[in-house]
Length: 143
Ligand SMILES: CC(C)(COP(=O)(O)OP(=O)(O)OC[C@H]1O[C@@H](n2cnc3c(N)ncnc32)[C@H](O)[C@@H]1OP(=O)(O)O)[C@@H](O)C(=O)NCCC(=O)NCCS
Image (cartoon, rainbow, N blue to C red; front, side, top):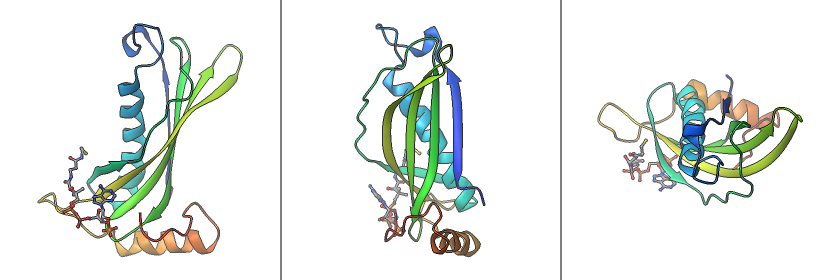
C-alpha cells in the first residue's frame, strides 16, 4: 500500500496575497488534501481532519513558482493516523527548492454516522510490516 501523496501546483495570481506570494489558506488546503489522500487510502474509507499541529511558514512561495506538497503516514492508532506534510516552493527556471513548512495532521477514519471507525485490519497489518522493515511508520504509539 502506498502511504504517501505528492501534489504540485503552479502559483497563479488567484492564489496569492497582496504581496504576490502564496496565500496561507491555500497552502493549508493543499496540505489537508494531501493528508486526506494518504489517510483515506490507509483507512479505505472516509476520514476527517481532527488536528493540525502548529504550522510555521518559514519562506514565501512566489507567484510563478510551483508549490510542492508531500505527505506520508507516520503512525496509526485505532482510528487515527498521523500524517507528516511538507511544503516546498520551487523556482522552475532555476530548478531550486525552498522548504516552506512541515506540519503533522491527525486524520480520523469515520463511519456513516461521523463517529470514529477502526482502521481495517489489513491496513494495520501493512503498517506493522512497514514499521518492522524500517519503513515510513516511525513506531509512535498511535497517531
Ligand atoms: C475527529 C472526530 C470524529 C473525533 O471524534 P471523538 O468522539 O472526539 O473521538 P475519540 O475521542 O473517540 O477519538 C478518536 C480518535 O481520534 C483521535 N483524536 C480525536 N481528536 C483528536 C485531536 N484533536 N488531536 C489528536 N487526536 C485526536 C483520538 O486520539 C482517537 O485516536 P485512536 O482511535 O487512534 O486511539 C470528531 O471530533 C469530529 O468529527 N471532529 C470534526 C472533524 C471535522 O469536521 N474536520 C474538518 C473537516 S474534515
